[in-house]
Amino acid sequence: MPQDMPPTGGYGPVQYKRNLPARGFRPAMYLLGTAAIMGFGFYRVGQGIREHNELAREKMWARIHLIPALQAEEDRDQVRRYLADRAREKELLGSETKVYNSDRFVRPTFAVTPETPLK
Image 1 (cartoon, rainbow, N blue to C red):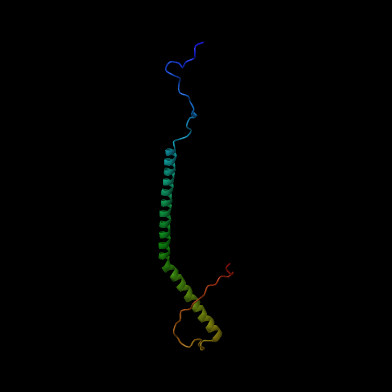
Image 2: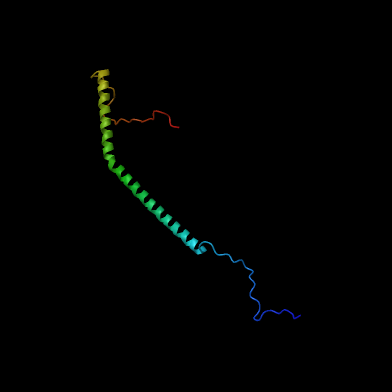
C-alpha cells in the first residue's frame, strides 16, 4: 500500500475564523451621524436662546414705554383719592377745622397688602 501524500501544491488554507457578514454601518459613520445630529441640536438651541433674548428685550422696552402711562394713571388715582379725602374731611369736620398743622402738601403713601396671606 502506498502512503498517502498531500496533493501537488499542498492543501488549501484551513478556515479557522468565523465568516460573518458585517451588519450596519462602519463605526465612523455612526460617529459622523451622531456629530451631525448634535451639531443640529446645538444650532437649534442657539437659535432658541437668541429668540428668547430678543423677546426679553422687546418685553423690557414695552415696559419702559408703558411707564409714563402707568405713572399718569397712578397720579390721577392719587388726585382722586386726595380730593375724596378732602371732601370727606369737609363733610365730617366742617370747613373751618384744620386737620393738619401746615398747608404743605405731603404726597400720600399707600401700602398695598394682599387679601389672603401668602404661603
